[in-house]
Length: 137
Image (cartoon, rainbow, N blue to C red; front, side, top):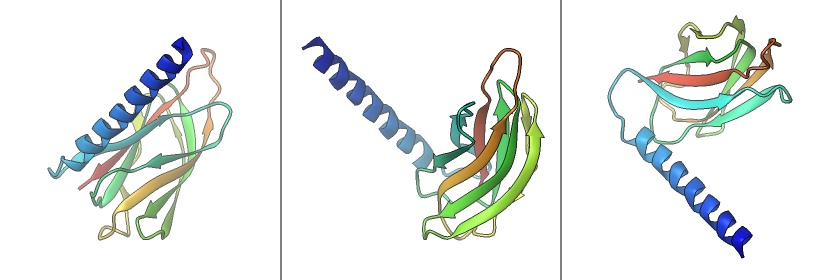
């Protein structure tokens, strides 16, 4: 019985945090840079997908790495219509650094997700890089 209650509570908390994230992104219509997604790089995988929520359109992206270094090989921006845009990055991010502005070709289209291929950089603390995707309206 305790397990069932715990699982139910965990599901409710998870769903409420997802809904809160959607609302925060959708209601922010101001021009400028906005954080549109984030993830933590894992030593076990070499690619990740960040789903982009909301109806926003962005003309540029920027990547920020915090907590540990990471090498990002490439990004693929997938638009709502399913068309991908491949962007080579090939850059070693040090902890606390960010990329140049990455101009997008599909400004008139909404972004569905950002897929990226990375390689974690071994470090003596076994820290994992936290990766943020920022979009410019």
